[in-house]
Image (cartoon, rainbow, N blue to C red; front, side):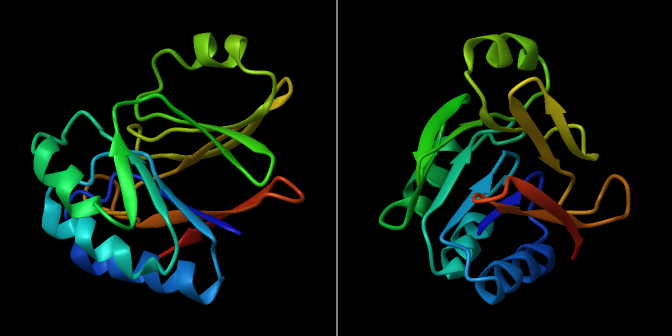
Length: 160
């Protein structure tokens, strides 16, 4: 199982709920699609018990501090981040701009993004698009994350 979140915006309570969800679901990878904000919030993600891969969002200004916070148990990089997990191709980015270009260059797999604060699970050709919504809940008042089953490519949006 892969845990997915985005736009946590320093909401420590929401991050802790997501971490608990991901641990309870035995996730072997967690993806964060940007806007973690501060290193203290990033450190909470190390409680997932599995590697965390993240990208910077438009509100992640303290990039060096975030990189240090991930050191040893995960990584945060500039988007888009391309990775493989158990044979599954994943592209992780923050903004929805450029999705069509990324889709044209991909041969399927999963494209994870955030920024809009709205959950989305949609097939576009051979690719699966996933936006877990906003983990922080500051903008829309609803804290969400997603669980992706890499074997079946099914996604469940979970309210935290």
